[in-house]
Length: 322
Image (tube, rainbow, N blue to C red; front, side):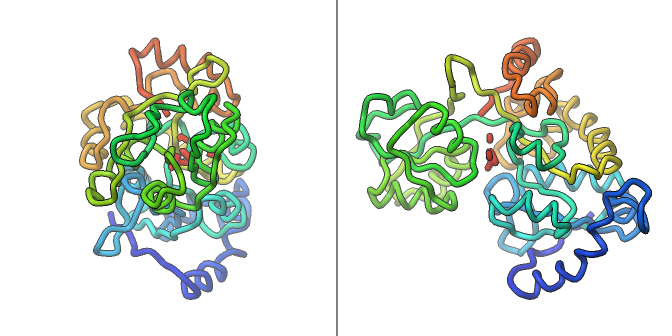
C-alpha cells in the first residue's frame, strides 16, 4: 500500500483535468468501461481530495499522505485491491463540487455528515466522531468555555469557512463571528487579537496549541455543542459520488470490520491522538445524520455507552472537519 505525494498547482490541475472525461462516467452502474470501483481496482490507484488538516488528512514532511482518516481509508482501499492512494490538496468548500465534477474519486477529509452535504455527496458510515473546542488567548481573559459563553457578550468568535462549528454558531445565533479560511488563519486571528476565540475540532486545535507553545494561545477543553437543548452529535466520514454505489457499499463493508474492532481502530488512528472515544458507537448510521435525526443519533450513542461527538463537522467537521 502506498500514498502518492500531493499534486499541487498547474501540473496537478492539468493532469486531473485530462482525466475528467474518463472519470465523469465512472459512477454509472455498468456504464462505459466500468464503475469507479472496478476502474480503481484495475488501475490500482484511487484519486482522493484531502484538506491538509492535522491530524485527519495531511502531507507529512516527506510529502506523503498521512493522518487518521487517511490511515483508515488506505487500509480499506488496500483490502479492496487498490494499493495506491493519490491525493490532491483541495480547499474545503471546493471538495464536494470537485468530486462531482470527476476531479477525484473520493473526499478523504473526515467531513462531518450533515443533511445539506448528503444532498450533494454519498457519505460512508461514520468513521470518526468529533468534539469541538475553543482556542483562546493564553489565560482565557474572556472566560470562554463553549458556544453558550458567547451569549449576552461582545466577544468575537472565529470559525472556519464550511466547518461544522460555523453552522453551530449560526444556528445558536452568535452575532460576533468572523470567518477564516483555515485552521492556521484561525489561530493567527486569536494570537493577533483579532478574535477572542476560534472554534474547531478538539483534536486539531489541541495539537496546534501543543506544536505552537510560543503563540500565546491555549484550548479550553472538548465540548459537544447544543442547539435548542439538543446535543449536536457529529461524525465524519469519506465522501463519494451519489452514483458510485458499488464503491460506497464495498467501502462500508470493510469500514464495519474496523469500527467494530476497538483494537484495529486504535491500531490505525491511535498514533494520531485518537482514542476509543472517537470510535463511532454501534447503531449510529450515516442515514441518521443525513436525515438530521439527532434524537436517534444521540440514542444510538447513549445505548452504546457514549462516543464523544463534535465536524464535525461542516458544511467540518468538515472537519475538519469537521
